[in-house]
Length: 639
Image (cartoon, rainbow, N blue to C red; front, side, top):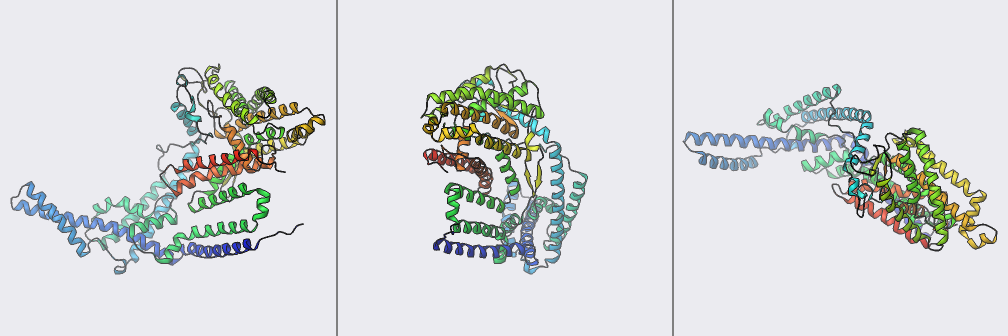
């Protein structure tokens, strides 16, 4: 065993990074622990208290100004003045009153000059009451959403269908792109309408408790600002409640809100408290970076630079999601779902590469077969496991025939496979845009209510929606494991692995690696190429059925057009080349590709809120990975 050689520069860089990580970690963990300490509570409480008193002080100034204006109005009327004189007098009175309030300090208060203990206690009571209310509200809404989830899925499908362009309007270029123009069919967001949600008895009881706590705080505020009346405080209620606490608040959000409203300087301790989570998370990231620097050479040799860089970038996105409180378990759950739902489509690339046709960018041929299988399943009214198996069998049968013809075409055009597969894939999608309008399907689920042809988006609620996703699924540490989906992907990988080690599979790989040598040994290279092409298209049919059941819908027309490029990018990202691929390349590539896309968009939204940067970020990531994949099309084979 060769001794691991580490350069001196790597060791120095590793030590320096670890030192910085230790400093960040110590400061960060101190800041996080300080949040629950008495000192931390006092800092946050002081800032919130100052913010609330500033808000109440605004009301006190308004009350003072209103009294001065009323007095001016009464004085002018006694003197027999008209409306013009009243307006001039009240305007002057308001100007003088505000100047006097600023000079005399009405509406402003220094916490060091008053007894804040009663105020702080009243504030804590209100904050606790609000927290209890928000927890009960979240639990009640979650139960309501779970109860109405199926209805939301149906309504979501109906809404998508209602927004689609009618079939008779799909005659021009780009027909059917409303739902399928994206490079990948994005997961539909099924949201439950909460407009009919009614507060539970527990929520109402806790709401009364919040009102009582607010009234108690108001009594303490009136001691500080005697000019304040109950009516004025009632108008400030929402502002004060939102200042104290809001649903989904984290310490960072509370701190930022209180700091912006109060203007108090929390000092170094306060700043460390605010950045504690960020510093501690950064320390973890720096340690991972230090290990990557230390073991750079073996990592590059094992993974390659692209996989190492993108793997580190995925870890970086995970850390950013944790810093921005983006529910990292939820994002990992989405990544696992995307791994399972896209994995079989990426796996379909492997037989094509191994048999010698290179990247099968004509994957839409197989995808069309799978879509036809799914449509026939709905047409004949099959559902559940029977419907899912029926769609797979029919889809594979159709794809076997089209794959055979496709393989014969590629044998006639050897040496130009990349170009041919691209054009064939685009052509079949465009041809089917016409077919979807004339095929004699009769199911009301699939047809437009008016005109001819099939809908762009067809829901699978009545057939096999989420069949694999829900099978044996479970949660661990908040991460939902789609057991059935991952098991099916694993089964497909095992079957392909076994086939590649069979006599036919070995002959097929030999034909792809060295056609002349294979011919010299008696292998029919053309036959092996056809077998590999058929297997690739059949796997694509299975892949789109798995994808659709997880997606919850089937999308027709232009939707499958770019899916071959996405599958090719994923497998090349995993370490494959145009002449050599393994199962591990499929798994690694799919995970990295989908993981970066899944985490990239919410992180971008969190970093730059209320912008379209997430979509820009998605395009940059997806197109950048595809660009890398295309640069690998002429790369050396990987052993």
